[in-house]
Amino acid sequence: MTTKDHGIPTTPVTDESAWTGAEMSKNQVWLSHLKPDHLAEIDDAVQGLRMNGRTIQTLTKTDFPFPTFSGFLKNFMANDVIKRGFGLMRGLPRENYTDDELGMVYHGMGLHMGKVIPQNSEGHLIGHVRDVGDDYSQMNTRGYRTKAALGFHCDPCDVVGLLCLRTAKEGGISTLASGMTIFNTVLAEHPEYLSVLTRGFRYHRRGQNPPFLPPISGPIPVFSNTEGQISIRFVRSIINEARVKLNDPLTNEEEAALDFIAEVANRDGVALDMGFQEGDIQICNNHLVVHSRTTFVDHDEPERKRHLLRLWLKVPGIRKMSREFIEYHVESGWSRRDGILPPTAPPPKTPPELATA
Image 1 (tube, rainbow, N blue to C red):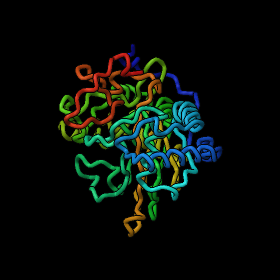
Image 2 (image 1 turned 60 degrees about the horizontal axis):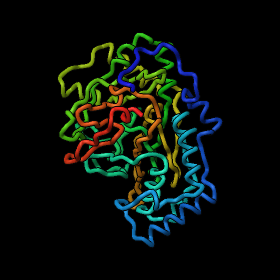
Image 3 (image 1 turned 60 degrees about the vertical axis):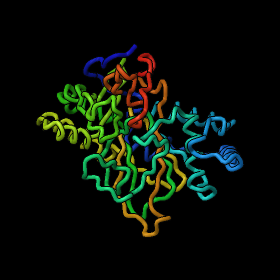
Image 4 (image 1 turned 45 degrees about the horizontal axis):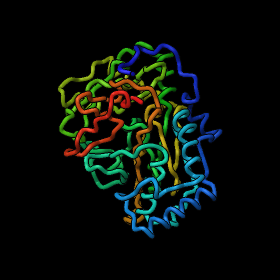
């Protein structure tokens, strides 16, 4: 049973998870087009949802039999998401379905890819990524409810997915970078930063914590080294918020190490810009990839405003990870892989042997 990280990593990552945007923009191995039989199975499922009066709260995996599409989804997860770290599915006919129906289809796909987990303290299983006028500079504001540019970061789950319902008038470009390429660059150019980055940083939970968890986490490694597998966790904004709350400014060395991660991700050729089309579904492995978004200008008409649906998944076997890295809480059995629990939710009682599986 994995209990802790295994020290400062000293060898570069050489598998397909260490990619560059320059490479990915040329070969587009990450782009998968949905086939006619997949679309037919999706349509059959939607017809069943309509007949049975299903809602997002009443869905089960049996509502989405997906005879052949399920195999495609499993293969997509095994090869694109678990190995490389990301992939994009294209071809879902967004115009054929209502927003609610697409949300249910998306949820059904998630049930075939992992366990769908809650994204906020309200227990929402589908998140709505759109500007509602919130100010991202304010404490406890979550970026997906704003139009602000978001720096490179990871979401607190195994896998995050985005389904594009509508694009912005201008901007809102999604950008991905390989955390393993960033690690390799730190190792090559500034190995002295690795002691700081593997020791980790505390995170402000922005009010999204149940009663059995403190508002600020313990130290979480930026680079976790567990049984030879490197994973990344990086959210600079809430590292900064935690230090403000704790009245504990970053040291010069900590500041330099965190700045360097962002600097590498923003270098020419490192990241991949991904402009969404309506119906596109982007799936990212948060332990291998960091993502960002440019600011955007919305359409004036409410029905045309930028709107993405977000899915968080727990995927058993996705990565070997330490308890420190996943914030495993011994007393409750919770880890960040279980999602954000409502304030009144009972502890999940996750057995230790399953927490890092």
